[in-house]
Image 1 (spheres, rainbow, N blue to C red):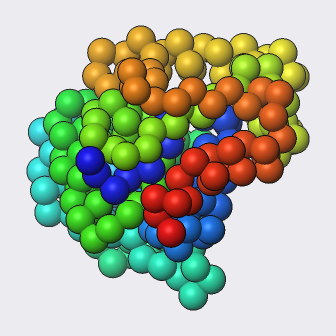
Image 2 (cartoon, rainbow, N blue to C red; image 1 turned 180 degrees about the horizontal axis):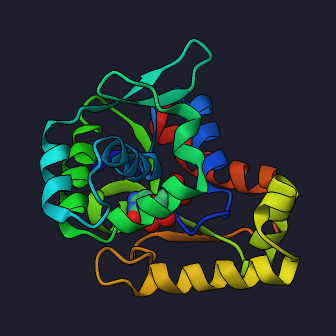
Length: 222
Ligand code: C5P
């Protein structure tokens, strides 16, 4: 068994906040794998490599270094060839690029290799879409965190306001469509591992969700 807490689930399910806070409470590194797909798109754009040029992306990833470093404030931040892309990774353009490069087999294979290396030093909490299914099928803990599209739309609107991209119904429809795309794609589709615990937090507060997971893992990790 790998000393990994795998947190998978769709976007806006609250899994990033959960994973970050678990890492803090348990004093273990937090790896947000979405950032690695975003950094791949970001680094490619800087090199004028197209997001569908699989061969060039594969070559780029072979020499690019990606590592998480802990900031003075305690956050785990992704550095790419010693550069900190920071907020640049959060743009909608880079998010679209991340989704695009994430459909390519060889990109996923290179990132998988890097992600698997990150568990060598001890416990980690790793968050993404395919951690429990593909990256660490032997993870000691697997959670699939989700909420209804309507509830996720509500949270996204509360967090992003006008930037969320429309009314509650429109945002919920876009979220449901992205779920459909992510869960039906051929490579590493978004789906719970058979042995993952499903945590639907549509009717749970954030604290309830956090405490539920924390109580399940704390004795093994601390
Ligand atoms: O989680 P985040 O929104 O940062 O992820 C950006 C994109 O990267 C997602 O839309 C998804 O297509 C891709 N991704 C993935 N597998 C992961 C993490 C992210 O395909 N493990």
